[in-house]
Amino acid sequence: MNVILDLDGVIWLAEEPIPGSPEAVARLRRAGHRLLFLTNNSYPTVDTLVGKLRGMGVAVEAEEIATSAQSAVKLLEPGQTALVCAGPGVVDALQERGVRPIREGAADAVVVGFHREFDYQRLTAAFRAVHGGARLIGTNDDTTYPTPDGPVPGGGSILAAVAAAAGVEPTVAGKPYPPMADLVISRLGNVNDTVMIGDRPSTDGRMAELLGVPFLHVLSGVTVEPDPSAAVVALDLASLIAEDGRVPQKPAAQESA
Image 1 (cartoon, helix red, strand yellow):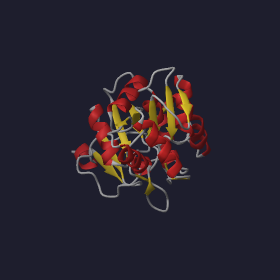
Image 2 (cartoon, one colour):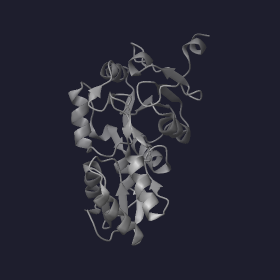
Image 3 (cartoon, one colour):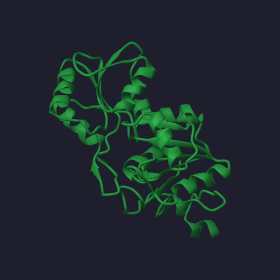
């Protein structure tokens, strides 16, 4: 089985691992499931995510991580120029794609993602580029980002500011939009035997719907109310994944019936 796992709110909250999640991933590994970690957080580079996961005891390879930064840069062609209103993950993905990242000036596109350095100067640079004809691409439109101390403004909040200033509708690349679905399929080949595990029905749940796979909702992140459309709801990843690595695709009462 293919198991797609969100990161923020499923594996960790900011810098803190969610108790039991690394062990649950290990159970999935032992059971032979194919894993893909899928994140809308475009700020960290893939190498940073690999190091963070391994530091928490989660075995992972770079090709098992797919980010909204990677899906965003697929919307651009090598040789183009992109003004970056985002973090290092976007810069890294652009360079791998052969797109030249810049900080100000005319560009083919403006790529907006989560970053804590956002200020009026960044907003003005992004606005001017879009006003001059650049395409506006958002890595995601999540308005909040989960932390151990509660939600903080997310990349979608920054994107909303740029879009409002420029008076345009952005193209959004991350979950739950088609560019991210295309990235998933390019990694997995097919999604015939796949589940999506996430904490946010508005992104993870809708991503599962777009892919045509069951959504397994864990309540350890942003959304603490069970999603009535989810195939399964659990408190966290540790309580969702059985000791033998089995992944439930319907409530326990139905499975035992």
